[in-house]
Length: 194
Image 1 (tube, rainbow, N blue to C red):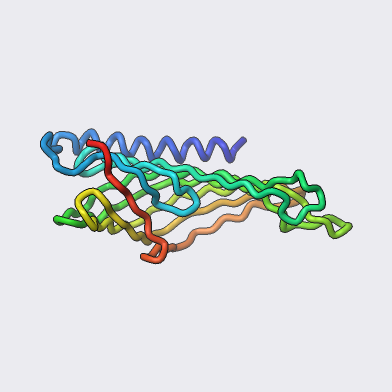
Image 2 (cartoon, rainbow, N blue to C red):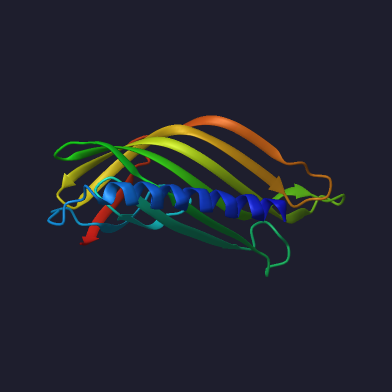
């Protein structure tokens, strides 16, 4: 229960930041902006189906989901399926803009729930269990426009992550770490909507 409360609080904090920042920035937003406001794309490979929507010239909102289903991964029972679900929320805040690039500060929140089978029972058979992971991130992003409405981006930053396996006797693991997503794992956005 505590895990779900922390997840909800993280999402609410990110959304509150976006609303507060976009309200202040809306006064400077140009009504004749040539850039499209919303686009399809992704920021992370765990949640590759996403949207980025610029609420103003300086603040936006990223929402993304991802899933995977693997049938019979090493189990004798052929009906066993391992499922993974991921969601991500981020608030891109444009710090500096150039003609074809934007430097962004992006606080975010990620949640991943995945079935695992890397534990074994006393008879040597794999055990299916669920691993729940959430992370709060702060990153710097470079979004570069290849053509007017298509961008690629790379990021680096810090993350606080908590992981808890749903196994008897398992303990929660937390970590504070740096990370980087370089141009071999780039994100992209295709801006389609004004």
